[in-house]
Length: 308
Image 1: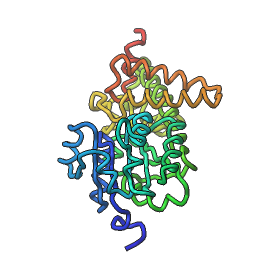
Image 2 (image 1 turned 45 degrees about the horizontal axis):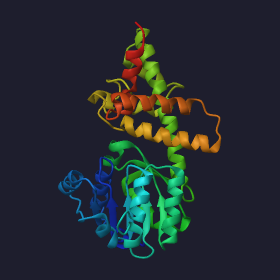
Image 3 (image 1 turned 90 degrees about the vertical axis):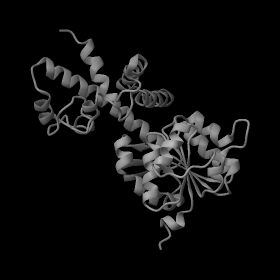
Image 4 (image 1 turned 135 degrees about the vertical axis):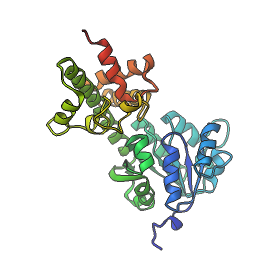
């Protein structure tokens, strides 16, 4: 039995059992880790239980018995409220001393650093490890984790992350994982818009989707937005375009992540043009019916707005 075996990791409180969290928790359980889950939505708790995840009555009960508290929340504000408590004790107060708080949400860099600061002040340890790879990656255990943590804490979280993902990158100290995530997703949003525009232009020029895919996927335009999440049905059978753009990675989440990137661009004084434009395009897409569609569904808006 090694120092980093599931038996020596201790109990993991997995808080946030949505489309991403549930399969991640299931993979940990299958690998032998002791997991106790919770979600504020009763339907998510029931679904997780059906998938084999034991669940506590509330988040505080889960955290009270855990060595690691892993959170997968929709926003930084929710994370900070959960840590501090709103009208009741928070997670930081309820957890045993020196608990490792591992946040896998995608939140603002400043909020991630604030979460780490208050966790450390409360006598705990902290790491941020946002993910890339979507629901498909969560189910397959092939996520990429971008880690912001003290080097001393990597040994404890690495075995968990290796079960849930195939690529782990230690990006630096607290908040660095979130910084890397928003940079990545800003580029992803930009590239998907470009891919969608290329396919719509190809349609106008008389190219088949397959012919254009065969060129782009092996030429200088090659990118994940084409080879894995292709915005047109056919060339990549697993892409959401073949399921009427059922996410996947929802337009609302892309709009949120690009909003975080926009905040960072403005705060750091970066003279960006495409990032802010992509943020505006996806904000409109989300507001006008695309919130629950895969973000590759942006191609429908481009096609519908095109002349002829």
